[in-house]
Image 1 (cartoon, rainbow, N blue to C red):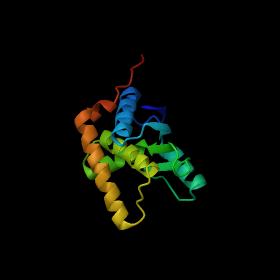
Image 2 (tube, one colour; image 1 turned 120 degrees about the vertical axis):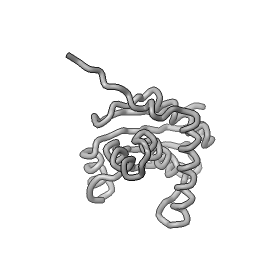
Image 3 (cartoon, one colour; image 1 turned 45 degrees about the horizontal axis):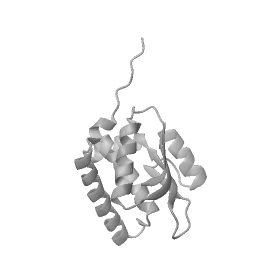
Image 4 (cartoon, rainbow, N blue to C red; image 1 turned 60 degrees about the vertical axis):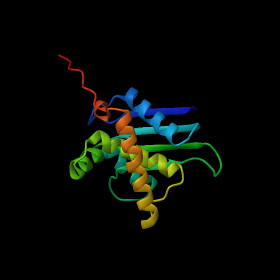
Length: 156
């Protein structure tokens, strides 16, 4: 696999093991047959997500995940995915899953958008949700996603 994966944690709601997350994302890309990529994933706060959503997309408020595709058709996968960790926490409670699973689901969702999946029409949305579920289940078997929660260092 060749490519560049940039992970940045720009939020303080949860401490996240970025090394493990990098392994999870690389495995996901490999499972999808993506061998050449330039991908940035930003874990951000609700405040920053609201700002991005309102200024770049002209939508009010926060959201769970925003994906920007920087590639023309028939070229390498390239883009940026912004994931709101606060939304992952809230939605995980709502759907009775772990926040780590919800976080990975958002990353899967963003990557599927970069692979051409669409969730605007109901048929396409169901297809995308099925693929998200399949990929999340596989990653859950391959990795202990609960380990994405990193303990914060206590300073005296």
